[in-house]
Length: 599
Image 1 (cartoon, helix red, strand yellow):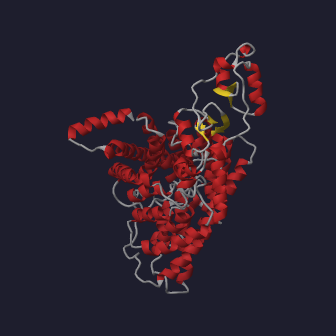
Image 2 (tube, one colour):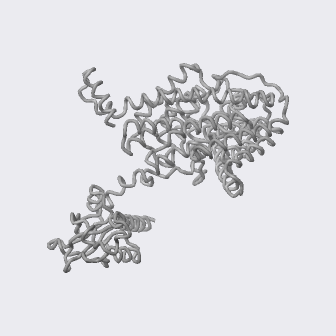
Image 3 (cartoon, helix red, strand yellow):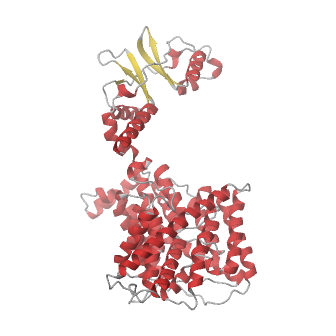
């Protein structure tokens, strides 16, 4: 943070900025994260393209079709279909070796790893992880694995954000925000959805909450990342959609409600199947790096009979949006729904590397296409053009199971350039969101900010202020005398399972000894050295009537884990001892009892 302050101080003086508090904190960081995420998205996009051309193209003579806003491949029969299982197996093996030998945390769909880092690791991601994720995911997708770009690019952006946080020496709170804006910048760039990417970075962390503090810097980073990527790739939307695909009749909402129910059910199937397959692969008694190869082999076998499951599948989704039921008949769409669910589990849940967003959009889009085909033959309450149902299906299925309905709605609108379908989508995605219930695709999400370890202290303050030290302290205290030998003291602490012992001399508190103090003395001297030689005489104490919040603050500031509790009018009289674990236990017990009363 010192380096950043120096840079911003110079900028403030140069440009005459008087109040640069917000600039000092986020503007430059957000721009840097956006630039790096945009550049990383370009490299990742090219890596997927080259890997696909080299492995599927050269190996099997097959290049999957692309969406309307990207360079199109010519639809042609696969010339060497027997090569597909070999290619997918090889891709899985290479990806597995890279991940499990270099960065095991890059396994699976990277968004979940980034979410876990936010909640449980203070926003820290090892610097090698983004690079391993980039290469491994490009190989997985390029070899035909059923995976997408969202997870890898989220972890790439988050990883670069973590590296910048290290460089600027940010505290844990700020580095978590930098990680979140890295997620938004990467996704906003590669999907050309800056608004949706920014909102996703705050919504994807929770199942029923937002990380509001990251929103404004995420806007900046996402716009910068999008600008960098689109300046190179072009400004067209990823998917092309006809202008007539608009919401025009209120009675159509009934059809969209039906779509919401079906998408919710298939979303549950998608999430639960993914983790069932993961548990199956974890039970296999083979090296971890071999498991993605086994998954790749299974994907390849399915791909011989249903090649539409190979790769991201955006080209087939574009055909569904176009209503091209000649190239993509309803039977194929139905097969794609189940095939993509299974193939995504084999590709990613096996330990491979890739995102679950693209498969989720494809599954949802195909559900929309099938439901439109069925309802179109029986009722007039649905639109005449199938593209509306396909696009709303894309939003609905993944928005519900990802627990990010708002962000996914906006993202898909930006990806298609069609905002007129937001109204029916609001109906459909809300139904799917509530129908999926406790099912999920991102297992490291927590329900709310109050459930996140990252915000535990913040949300525990009101309760800690109500609890007293006297209610949480241990009153039967194990003590030592100043003349006790260290060998006897070490045995005393071990037999009682304690880490700190107050020292009393003639009943008066004179010091405290922790296991770390004993560890500093060579064990050979334990029978000679006495407690008085190592005890801490600088006593930090607490009083029974003080709050646990005051105790925790005092312990944190002085870097201690135990607080002797003394009499209010007699500071030498020991009446108890309070450990950090006692505070946590008292807090959890009170919180649990409060929850039971509310229930």
